[in-house]
Length: 132
Length: 78
Image (cartoon, rainbow over all chains, first blue to last red; front, top):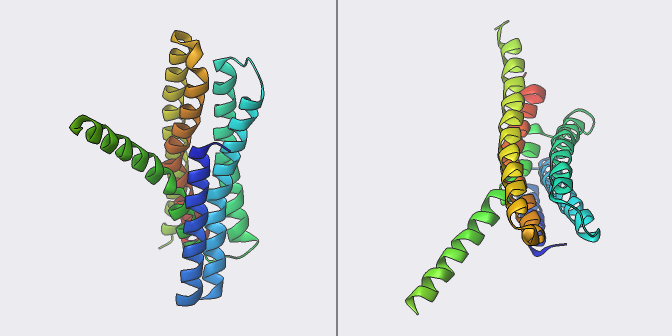
């Protein structure tokens, strides 16, 4: 797995575990299960994207259009997958919707935090180098 | 009150639909730029593809959250 995805998956996994532990002790065990399920749905999306990227890396001499096609396909699959998994959680597993959604949103927000943090760090490094 | 439930379904559908629309426009622009970059400098494809997939996940993140909210509205509120 590429380091960018490993960082993201690690952050999503940690957030999910910490959040589920907090809700387990502060609220109820059912809410912890729901929170963990929501976070896991976000994590599955990340792992799926990482797997699709690694599929391309394993093959040689693929053109750019192959990656674009693969990316569009992956976006549709992730979209449908998230809808399916959340609907499954709400309807079949009877999870608490608010907590499932909280876990999912918090897990998904790692996607917004990690690139912003990486950019901030690059900017800070650049400023430090300029000051030297 | 009778009107509230259909309106909630419409709200959920709008959230999912507009989220999908935003994601498709964003990924379309991103794909176009990736192809442009790859055509200009084919030797950079390995670096560009990683960035492409990472930014694709970033573009996808907010519509995914909208999908989650829509599912909440459809299954829990309506």
